[in-house]
Length: 76
Image 1 (tube, rainbow, N blue to C red):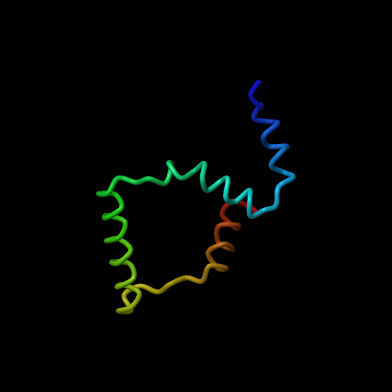
Image 2: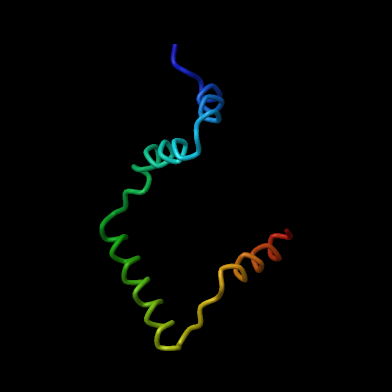
């Protein structure tokens, strides 16, 4: 009889974190497959945003500040 989802969760809680990470990566691998046109669009957007930061048009915001802002918005 196959294991239930709950049994799998309980079993994997006993695993070392790196093995759990490997399992999650392998299970979600297909979810990360992206349409090449979407992937290219994201690359172009990333380049555009980086260029804006480099030429001073936009300023980067520190990750801790972003987290703090999000926390205030969601009330944490």
